[in-house]
Length: 139
Image 1 (tube, rainbow, N blue to C red):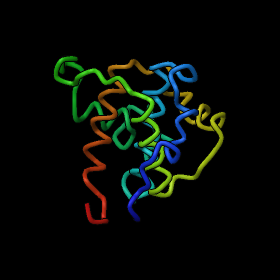
Image 2: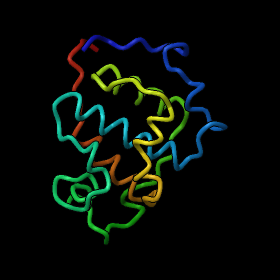
Image 3: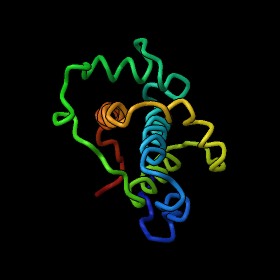
Image 4: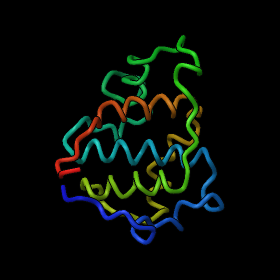
C-alpha cells in the first residue's frame, strides 16, 4: 500500500459534511468503511453479516468481545466528524474497497441504520482492534 495523499482536496469532504449526513448515518458509514477496509486487506469479511448476531457476524463478534453488561463509559461515545469519515473512506478505497455512489453506500448500510449508536461504537472498537496498525510504508 502506498502512502496516502492527505490534502483537503483528496478527502472528498463534500460527501460527508454535517448538512449531508446526520451523526447516526456517519457512524453507520464509518462501521461500513472499516469493515470494507478489513475485508480488502484479507481480514474477516463482515460486509454481508454486519448485523448478524451469530459468530462470524459483526454484531456477534462485537458482543463476544464486549457483552451487554459493559457500561457506556467503558465503551465511550464517538462523534464522527467530517474529516474522520473522509479519511476512513479514503483508507478503505486505498486498501481495495470498490468505489460506488452515495446511493449504493446508503443501501450498504441500510441494516445499520436501526442499530443503536452505542452498538455502532462497540463495532468500531472491534474493527479498530482487528485492523490494527497495518501500514506497510515508512512513517
